[in-house]
View 1 (cartoon, one colour):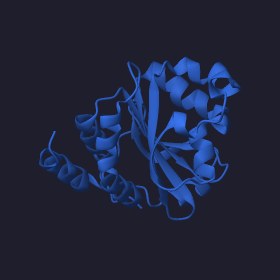
View 2 (cartoon, helix red, strand yellow):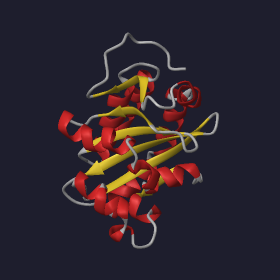
View 3 (cartoon, helix red, strand yellow):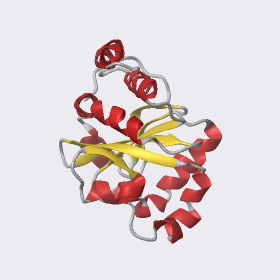
Length: 200
């Protein structure tokens, strides 16, 4: 796919900023570049319980990927640990952030193996107030190829700018509801519908 072919999708993402249509527009653009199975955007700030900003899991999968994750396993998640350091903004493979012997560790054996994923990669984006948005792209069937990673990374300036704009008020939301685990403005399989309004 040529870069010019992505311009309509990029325009759609920009046009959807501040509305409930934004996550779907963004994930549609990313899937056009490299198809994948699931998306989830978590908001992190320090060691506070992460909140689910958006996901497209079916109900049965959401139990594992969101509800069970927020119950405690996130504390050992390489993405959570990287967000609390924090790492510079960028696109990362989980395997590149995971500690040595990750596949023999508690997080993988007791939780991550239940997800059935072949690979998870994530855009890490810092937002004001010391918070981080991690937009995870997940595949069940096979890992991402090197050429797919390069193409997704080429969209990083667009992804970072849009995530900062759309979820710029994340830090305040985390402080307001640190235990709820769900952003009231989130979109996803279990999110209530809401009228369009500018994101804070």
